[in-house]
Image (tube, rainbow, N blue to C red; front, side, top):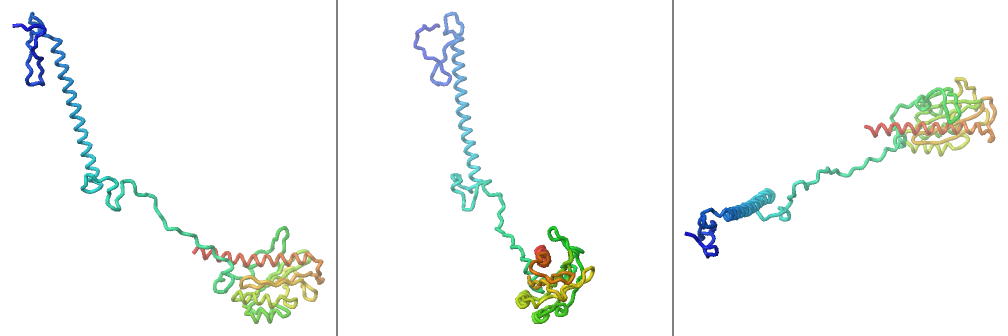
Length: 294
């Protein structure tokens, strides 16, 4: 039985239940299968399978993505699957949001200790004290000038080493010790006397009361230095720093009196006065540094 070329027989579709399969010999009267039609039908089925697989894979991917999203929200926000970063509980933070920089309370270094505090009272000024610590070595260099060191002396009877009205002033203000050292150069000699008190106030008062020409320390000869300033006019100075009052007496070793034109005498006395001040200040610096490092 054969069909016409333009018949109304419906095309068979394996995906449509009501369709009918064409006979193998519908391509012609010789009974040969219509291979072109069969190939087209097979291609159609393959395309539909691919579409189904793609659609199913997209749905599966969406489902997995939803599951991962729900798992992340559940781990961070509790049990609410709709919770997001904006709905985190109070005090919560996202991973990595915490600062890793350590914080420290602001600090400030303590102010440096004042050296003068340590030389202003016997309570703090406890470092070893002697003519050797105040006047070390055998010579003194001030700038380009070198002075030779002579004799030194140390006594607790302050009045015995002073002249004029200075013995009375030292005793009244509680002098506990008087140290002296002599330096010389070119026929000029100077003796420095350092009087020690318990407080700065006592030393300051001594300076103000002894600021006249009638107050002086006795010159100290010896160790190559002749007598000086016994009868001649000499230049004297009085000063104070901390709990120390210090004095200089400068003159010629040949007995000549000093005049205002003798600049070398004035310069030598000023050098030794400056050196004595520096030594007392260094004493305070050393004790302040030691206290700061304790």
